[in-house]
Length: 258
Image 1 (cartoon, helix red, strand yellow):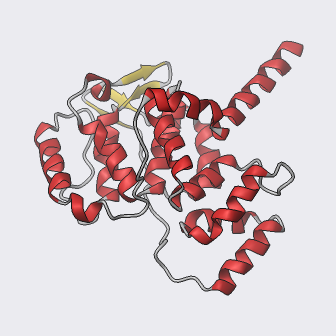
Image 2 (tube, rainbow, N blue to C red):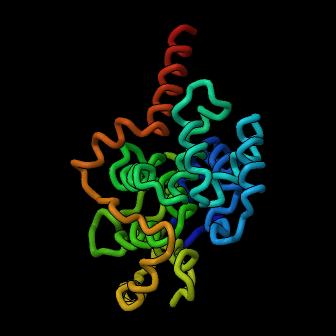
């Protein structure tokens, strides 16, 4: 877990500290508090176990939903899609958990949503939540997505500040996350607000040299693109953003009435 600390007079606070309520919800229902870990989706699961989990999920067992979402097992794709589509389903409202489950199973629609949230989300909280989702999904999708922040681009080097504190740049966050995603990482997680030019060169060289093996890590994210033209309609239909907007609208209406 990222922790607040002081370096050269700067107070570096991950956005989840600033938006504590959002983090608690994310940790409690989506990531199981394991920000960098991945469920062992390669493990063997019997048909009986899958059937038992599906029945428990239909019966409203939240643990079964989390097991299905964390597994990355494509056998759960139909039931997860049904929960998302059917308004009367037990977990229709658990849109982020379902989104993550489908993304881990390699569903391009949900992988594209997460990529769009991260790169074109309209607020820093939306983008940071997508960053955490990307780490949770893992695979070549996450490696490729986060390695884009290593580019020599002022947008990725910008240090974010608001009334809640100062936040590391996207490049810093990527350098902290990639070692947890790349098998046999060439470097450990790096501290933010330091010149990491040499380390970035090493990362770029390593990723290029090992692309053949890394690109096979599931989910691969094949077909997912980084395009504002593509992402504009995707974000409008993204259920995780629409649900959050609806909650904010109801909250504002309640405040107005009072």
